[in-house]
Image (cartoon, rainbow, N blue to C red):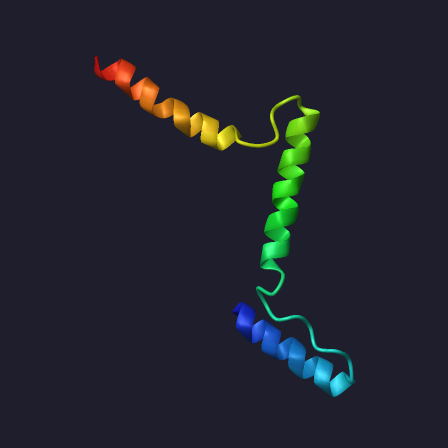
Length: 71
């Protein structure tokens, strides 16, 4: 059963039982992404690592590594 089918079934049941309809699938996706990002930053701080810019710093080191290997 797909997410859409499950949502339609839940909406149908809620309507017949007089309950509020469930939220549409994907409605809170950005909130989940923000919470996940905040959790990663929090755990990085607890581990003593920088909370921001770790990926950008790692990607910035790649060109230097490749230049060293080419020569």
